[in-house]
Image (spheres, helix red, strand yellow):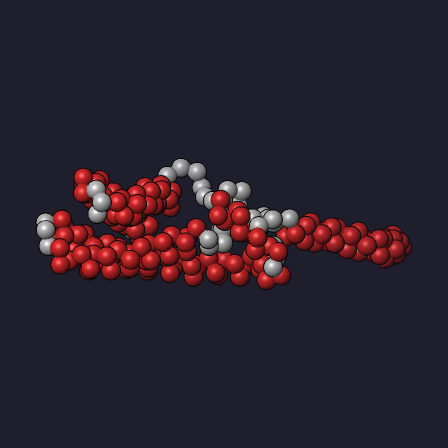
Length: 209
């Protein structure tokens, strides 16, 4: 009985020390957790140049209080990104429809129906506005949180096709301004337009499906 009492007394004396050690360990774990949150990566390592200029750690937007690089404000940026890319996709399909109409009108114009010139120019203006607005929404949207995974992905194919249709669209517009003075450029203008349409259509398909 005496031995049991002695053990009980010893445990009572050790209890404060045990509690102190547990509290110290618990605080240490919380400190580590807080440290992980504080050091969480808020930007991907790889960004396109337009995103780095605007949204990089020292980007133009970081000078505004609204877009300081904090977890809370990055969460709001991701909402902006989601809206921008949803609009990018919807406007992309509208632009694709305009390209189809432009192709039909352009074919008639190439076949000698000069009365279609006004419609062709109006459609060209609409397609250009739609196309470059669509491109801008992707180029200037805030970056995502993490880098893309290695290997093939529909996003990477979408971006590769974007380089083709962007180059083709620029070429189409440059040649369009020269065709009137140099009709020999018509085949090149048509080839650039078809390349822009085909690569743009494929880019929309791969990202959707």
